[in-house]
Length: 169
Image (cartoon, rainbow, N blue to C red; front, side, top):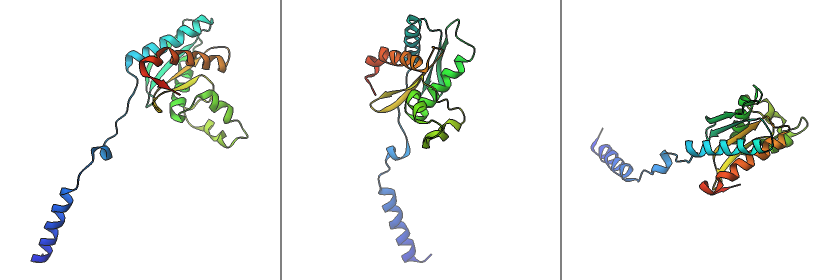
């Protein structure tokens, strides 16, 4: 390399190394439900279902869809733990409640293909937990007599912990 090429390279390296590196371009920061709040959410949801004489399973997943808490009432069907987990996972994956997803993904709708996604369960009873517009977790309920009843229990559970998280949505 000749002298002018070396000087150009040296100047370029000094200039590039002087540019600020922004950490927010390299890392992602997010919030997720704490184990204590996830447990409280599951317990409050189960308690609301019990008040209505529903035997259900309740799953709470973190913002990545990993199960944090799974509670099954003593007479809830054997399918309910997996069903509640899948509903919670579906709610966080689509960032909307599964009752709405079920209504909008019928056979003749443009969204009907969502029903073919592995692991997704588009039956009412799954709700994402939102804080300041960001998904921090999800709750799923299975075992009540209707999807709307599962949904109602999930809403009650979220309302029970809303003050702790300043929830929206």
